[in-house]
Length: 70
Image 1 (cartoon, rainbow, N blue to C red):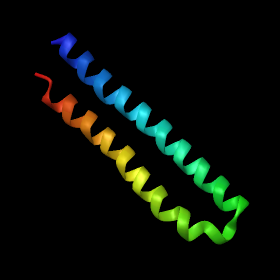
Image 2 (image 1 turned 60 degrees about the vertical axis):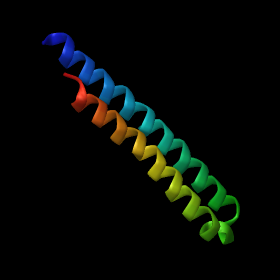
Image 3 (image 1 turned 90 degrees about the vertical axis):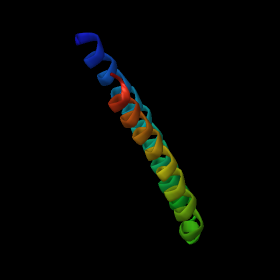
């Protein structure tokens, strides 16, 4: 029982750490790009949001894996 709980905690913990780092890097680079060229904010926003959505999908996969561990 204890090993199962540890496996669940590691699955969601590592998945969310990676997702947090990924979204942080995406956001920082997007803000940096907009800071260098404010007119490009419209061109940067959509790819940034798509990248954030894909990064969040990794966290959701980690949550599904954590719930599926028996």
